[in-house]
Length: 120
Image (cartoon, rainbow, N blue to C red; front, top):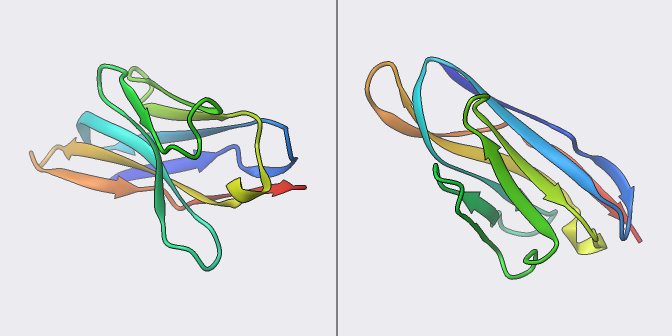
């Protein structure tokens, strides 16, 4: 069994910063790509950022220059540093990871979501 546990969400004023973390645990053999999606009320879930095993990140245009994704492979953890937050960044943020488990199969696992609220 594999779990992704997120932390770091909360309420922040516009212009502020937050750092999200997502730690994977359980029957893990290896982790491939990791990343973050978000879903605001009344909107579809959208990709925010993703990172390869080697550390190459890619970002949605709406967050480029403000958000930075990183990972610690030794800790099976992915991070999202969010700076210069805007009201439109308000959403539930979900981490995801492509994980090969001890059964030998690779699946995409999801975290439970963490609320980020930016007040203007």
